[in-house]
Image (tube, rainbow, N blue to C red):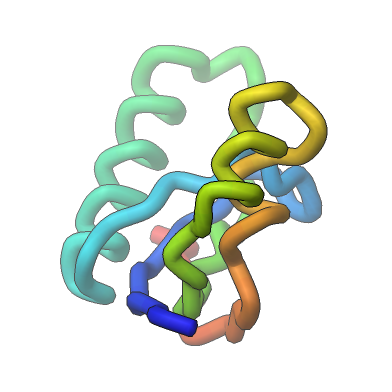
Length: 93
């Protein structure tokens, strides 16, 4: 099984539909901080965002059967490919 490691931040736990992926932890932290700033500047009536989780994710490269299930809306790409997810940081600024 071929795998790759990506980092993802989550805007609204535990909603996995709101995971945003990057290639490095540093890029993920920067993207999460930018997302927080944008949200706080553009949606002040919504209140402050809570802590945003950053995960180290091990993803399985999908095979043909997995791709077919994803393309036919039988599963999400995240559900099909993420085999391990570990909390590595929280963004609170």
